[in-house]
Length: 253
Image (tube, rainbow, N blue to C red; front, side, top):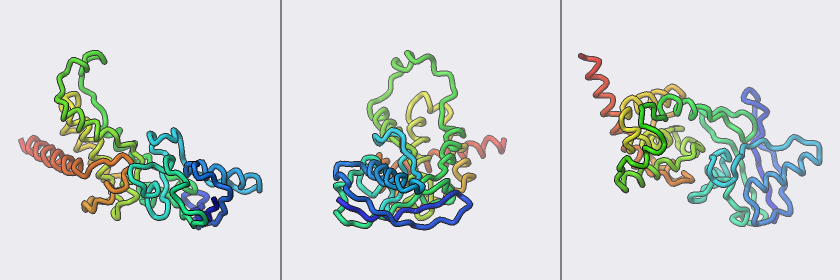
């Protein structure tokens, strides 16, 4: 199959970017989208041109590195699918495909399709961990956890931090990401001890990074490759309100 690609090219964060047009010829329909880009880059290198810069790591839908907007939708808009799992058979022969980086102030472009998502790392550093003493690894197995709680925590823990939620949101909000990270720890007894401090710190870090406010349009849930539910944002808001009240009450004493 053949495709016409319109790819965003930008030398660095200080340079002006623009779309460049390339032809992808003899593409195997069973290739992933990233494998197709690999083929295009090989042809560019053969002609002495700069290859298209894009991120990838595991290529198994686990790491979240393959972040790009394909035809206007993060990861191509296929339900529960990352860009590395998007197969070329889902496109029409002769189709024109537009490829862009995430568009968010908190995710500045590094080069071409690569953006700096270290803002997510700083949010995690602010509180996405358990620091209380919970014993050794073997002790975790003897802590009774109700099955519904364990499953709910695992649902939240599926978040791979790809940033599709931010890219899809009209406000570039990171609420779904933060909600998943706050929830999967707060639901479990090991993380419940410091849940108030955690949610306050992570929300503060999210705001300081420049992410927008959540207006609950649901676009984040629609494009999330791990189908993280909006219900976790509700849980985050509840956790934050309680923590803020307790913090204010303690400060008033």
